[in-house]
Length: 314
Image 1 (tube, rainbow, N blue to C red):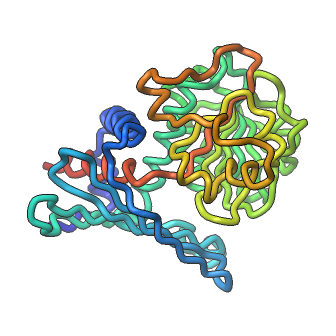
Image 2: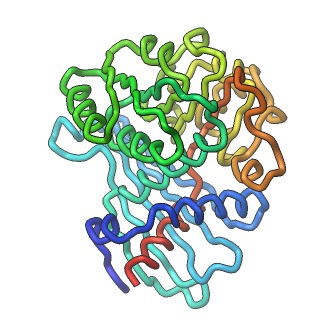
């Protein structure tokens, strides 16, 4: 079994190819051609942490993938990253472990950012005046990086909880070529941007219904486990178009789950991103529509980005 370290993966992977593979994976998932067992979830309340175990096999593939991903959100105060993890790739013909990808959570972070890139390409308004980023961590950085190929906008409004976090993120975004406005007021970010990406592990709604202007697109990726929430359920209900990665998964957690449980929306209002990519449903139809992509993370993304990493390394 090969053991591959994070630096090798980051240096070798072709992200444009990974986007294509993940798009194809979403299509296959929505067409029922992917085995995705129920997600295993662990919660560590005393440590402000969680862990998920996801796995997937795509019909016709030579391999299947099992991924362990952790998030311990007090780690930065200890000098450790919030996220970690690894992926194990096994043979689908004889069960042998083929490769252990010790990516330290980078592949999970990147496949999430690439899904955000896909969602923005499909759903963002034609003219993006400002990008809003909720959060300052690794995912907030990856999302901004991956928006550059699909949006010409180079103005970002970032919300964070501390001056130090905002200063670090502002330096990062400036180096990417963005004009940056940093704020500790969520309303300022929400009202000023019309392409918003939510990346925090918040357990309470941060963005209110009435702060969002018509024509805005929101990609929400932070609520990837039960109990997490960044959007007011009334805002979810206000959206003209709601796209999810997995309807079955979004019943259980994610922004949509809160609105469903409150009876504010029903499943007939939801469409999967795989069906949208396949042309079986429509996305944004008017420039004044509010669109929402609720991306809780589907294991097919892990299988395909792992496949891309292995292919790049030969």
